[in-house]
Figure 1: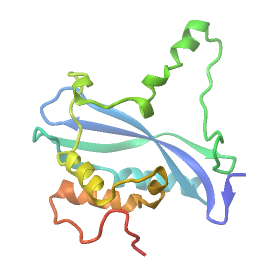
Figure 2 (figure 1 turned 120 degrees about the horizontal axis):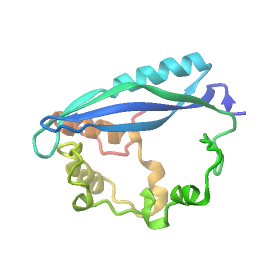
Figure 3 (figure 1 turned 60 degrees about the vertical axis):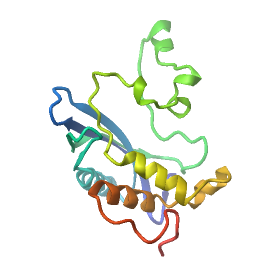
Length: 185
């Protein structure tokens, strides 16, 4: 089962609405977030609390105000297996699809997010720019602070440090004296 002394694992599907000042269209994300909790009720509360903590306002590269707001959960699913390589964490089910509908669900390798090269010139011009001002600075600072020699170096990156540095840049605060990836125990 997907439980331990720390609790069970759940997948929360969080709905977030992002609005850009001066744009008529919104951007809606459905984020899949892992939650560890002792019960379904605790997982529900943690998901709601975590979603609300993600509410933020910042400026995009054009200086427009961007507001992201958590709207609620679309689903909360318990993971019934241990989190290991190749384990299913959740699924969706359709009944009665024809072959054309099935094929429309399958993407070629180059269209999978992990293989796509993200180029802002490829973005749909009708999609509001929700990037944070300073995001490019975050990436360049990350590369300066911790050039990756090999894939194993990724294990040394502490996501809390990356998020803290991103928040610091978005708020325009001074750079921390510690490097990204340094242990903060």
